[in-house]
Length: 200
Ligand code: SF4
Image (cartoon, rainbow, N blue to C red; front, side, top):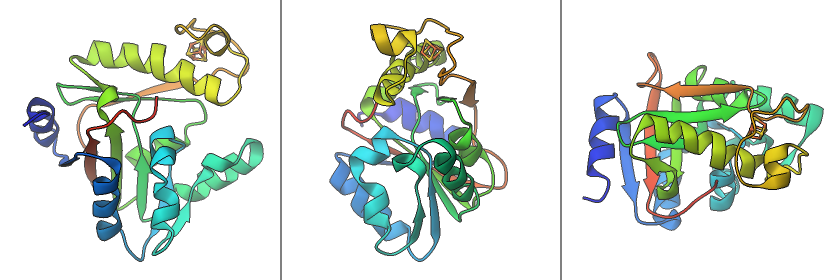
């Protein structure tokens, strides 16, 4: 199978893993799995491009801060931390089974590791790198600059668009970097791999 090595390593790290050919199949599966619960979202371009929050809101209470900003973003992000289920993507994944996320506010990292019955990590094939070192490089030099640009920030990476400058800009979005080494204790976690290019 195409992602055999990655799937094997993620399972070894105690995650459930499901793999899909496209967004439609993944969304159909998640709509069957997640019903009549409260669902929080991290701010994710992958999840936005899937329209997952809207789809899940048919049968669930969905709390998604991604359409808000400033104080509203923080308040909605806090509410998303105490839901039954949490959805996030990642900025980089190593074929050795580690996942990397960079965060400016902390809502995404916090929600991914604590406070929920189950977390889903959803990502496309463009996030996959052969090693943890390359996954970290990707998170810092590809995902973060593109996210800064999406948010309209005036950071050097967003203005120049080529790489991270390890800036001290007030709008810096790289304030913490979380490496998921293995599934956290006392929480269920499922990885959803989609064989498409999704998000940054
Ligand atoms: S540290 Fe600054 S320059 Fe580097 S990716 Fe983050 S926001 Fe951009």
